[in-house]
Picture 1 (cartoon, rainbow, N blue to C red):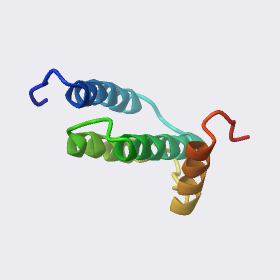
Picture 2: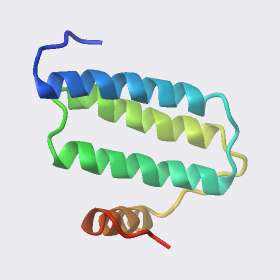
Picture 3: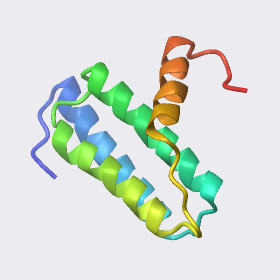
Length: 105
């Protein structure tokens, strides 16, 4: 990891890197069904939107690469994976961003 400065974006970048690395290791320990894999796709896309649009972190490239690696690892660990259509993922995430307190049911 890179050097951590005593400022919000740098600290948050370091925290997200550690959390995502842990999440990636957890992904690598399990086998997913297709719906679990699709949920990972949605969760990772939502995280990507929140992190990039809110400028929460300074060092985006490694974090975004880890998010891609999480989805790839989940796909590799899925029995008969069928990826969710990109427009559906985007629709779900945009709806949640517009109404963060509403459930998606």
